[in-house]
Length: 188
Image 1 (cartoon, rainbow, N blue to C red):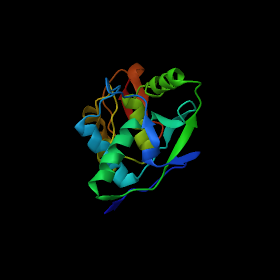
Image 2: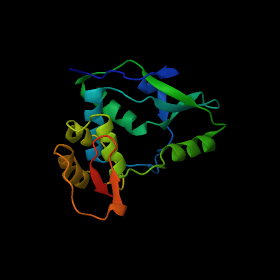
Image 3: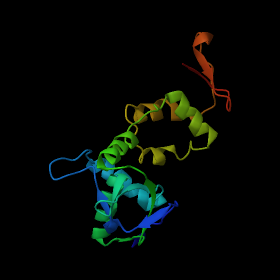
Image 4: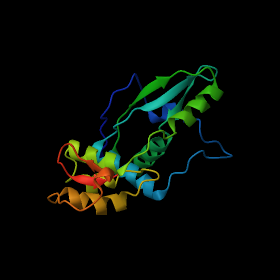
């Protein structure tokens, strides 16, 4: 039996059965969870545990707690629990957000689901260097979902270079960025 450990702390703790989904109704689902992403979430929780608390809102009119962030993890955790192959935590950490009504809570869901920052190759390259993730990147990559970023292209074009000695190539120096840690230069 695989134990799912809690690897974060919250302001509140709830059983999965005590939390309700606001973003899906009988008529629609706000987001789809592909089979591939279901597996990524499941595998990530098997390896690293429950790393991030749920965000929840308390609807005083109904005396119910609703997710504003974590619906996909909720779905995956329920399937894992139903399989009987996992030892699940009794309760999960949650962070409460404040909203005056369902409309404002729905706005929070949209805001929390938005991606404001964009990954860049240079930024990811520097991040991998800074935190010594080069040798682990192939495994880490399997659990990532970065919209509008070609992880396979990045890995084949950049991670190979990370493990080799830097070599100079002739390019216009005005178009170069140099990694402050390793000194490797690459085009902007």
